Length: 594
Figure 1 (cartoon, rainbow, N blue to C red):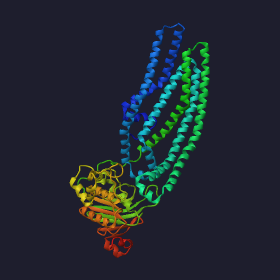
Figure 2: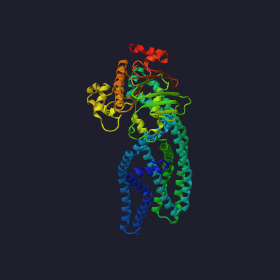
Figure 3: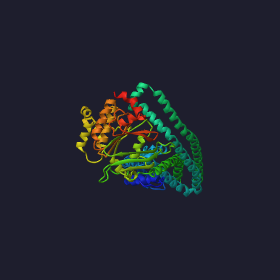
């Protein structure tokens, strides 16, 4: 989709572009349905007048055929189109779902990472991607409803104007303030929705805590339902009060508008008694117009208000969509990972790098400098919050607005394309994902392209997960998680092994593991590090951890404190210096029986 300012017209243009046939049929049907009241007035009036003429002996009996046939045809169409409309609407929604949702997903995949971490941007992204097809679809429905309303009103007003021109003018004049009220109402409600969105998002999270399996064990052990329910109540009530504050005045305005239009309807009905008494209007036309006027009053009092209110509300979504599509993209974000031709990793260097997260005052890294050479194993250690994970995020260019230089093989890291960065580095983050797909598919996600059978089974054996697979009902094709009835959930350590296998299956130049053994016991941790030692013997490996017992094999260890490297060297050197590393190691060595 283009980067432009989107408006109400795009609720028709987007569906027309995505599903032209279904949208066109839907639109034509709406026009015919909109003309139904005016057509029924004329046909019904003709039927009544013809019947009176036949009863008075002024017309032959066969004069009734055409009005009767036309009225029957109109009613048959009305009944039939209801069923057809449901079919068209289902087809339209389905086709839009197939095409619109992937467009948003593609845009999301290209966004710069800092937009995902920024709370305000993330709220806007949520508003756009939450039921996106439903919003476009309902926006289109309300546009068509409004157009139908306009056609309906105009056609009836033309009939009225032919008999009493000033009555038609009065209807138009009264309509203008009603339109203004409806626009104001819609804007107020959308503003309330924007303010309440954060509350609904938090309430949604608390709802998950109360019902999802993920939290079931701790719900049972800690019995915290009442406390979480209180949190939910607080967020939901706050959102509800925002809506109530906006909706009560709006309902009062709507009620006043409806009362005015009802009075208007009775006045116009009385006015038409004058031409009827004067003989300038037939009884059939009088009955048809009166019926149409009261239908029009109903339309103007609720349908018009409702349509304009919703159009104003959905205009807010188009404003969000405009901002979303203009959000900064990472150039080349969708490129397939590919190592540059002839590239061999030789070094990665941070030179006086300082960094703070967007909208934060404090620097996480300050003048951080270090160098990593090829085919060595490095470890970054330090207390939580020291900046270890931030270093990883900068290496893989999740953030690129840092001060100083990061050099890859002596070249500014920013000069490499995202696809090249993805290929060169393979990362296991501390908060790794658990994909509810098969074991095999979980691992294959780590590497795009043809299936490498040898590498795949080598990885399974190396991570020691092949024994677990042998016990699963469908072996490597067993669905994981709790999504399906026959799926199997894994322990925390098993999920982490699977994530490590996904990283190792990717044939990269540099492997980075951020707290790779957080869910493993000391023996499993030692085993995992030994595995990596073997699997990365001709590669460069970086380990980020605050658990020191199993990283003594590292060729060089960097101690991170207050955003910079305060100590570096191998295990023996750092122990002999008796600094921060020594103190951390001494406090942990009993975990490892050292």
